[in-house]
Length: 391
Ligand code: CTP
Image (cartoon, rainbow, N blue to C red; front, side, top):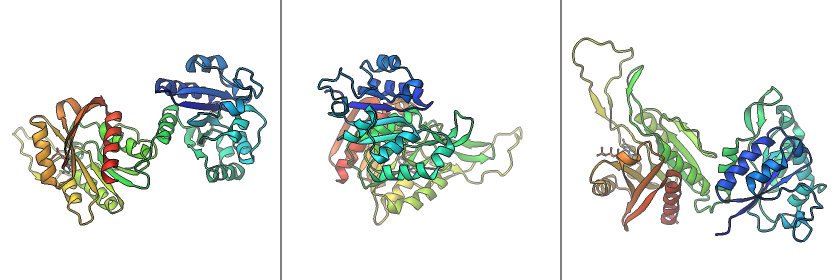
């Protein structure tokens, strides 16, 4: 398949050096990347760097004769999936708002027939200025997607809103933007990660779930256009771009968060590895050893998925079954027992904590194996399948 073409616009700002990393990520993901720099951008990043990373010419001038018809402002916008300007300076935002066309990048934006995304980057006060805020609102109203800015330490020494989103976040946001949106207008609620059931204030019962699959499913659902809420046990993972995350440590916390959110959702995907049992009465102070054997009384946790599936207006419910043996048989039985339309079976010892997985989707129509692939890819295929089922 012909690679999709992206125009990566770069304007003047310290964050321009991060555009090189963004270009690298896009090239690695098989996009053809054409960089277009403003004059100011060339003070912050070298043309040779971008040329080497993208393996393609870098453009700066309206009068660039290398482009076939001698009209780079038209030609570069043709057959282009999107223009992403990262970083976008305050000045360039103002230019876009007014439809000015006095250099290649601004003229290209005005002449384009493809979506435009911008990643603002500037000093905190410049971002907060009413003029910039007005411009950001106007650009959104004009159909431009404004990504960020993020908050944090700035090159000028100040701290606040105005940092460009990190290249990885921009990459995820752009690739998500370009994907089909079969879940547009749908709300998806997901549980992910392990639970932690306290024994005393410093100890507890947990498991080896990393949360990677649940987080990948949340990212894939968002990329498919859904509004996503992720109820997460303790993990070390960053919240996927565009996803609302609610932290919940114990199974009972997860249940409470799910019960608060579930009425509004169309799909519920239970990926979390929830402890089946919790200590009956966690100690309020650190337990001391007594020199004798110790017995811990455990009580059963509620089955969140089964509860949601039995609600009168239940969403489309999806469960996971990580089994060590007789994987498909146990998973199929679990699907029946929990009264859910779809369960995803996998071998626990291969999947827990890993970056890739092989799974089998089991529903009323039968079994659909998905061969081993990175969890991000498996997540995308699962979401595509769910979108087909609820269509
Ligand atoms: N699940 C849940 N609430 C629980 C336990 C599990 O919502 N208290 C969900 C999991 O998120 C998963 C599915 O139910 O989607 C299956 O979880 P699993 O631990 O494999 O099954 P259990 O119901 O615990 O059954 P068993 O102990 O027999 O394996």
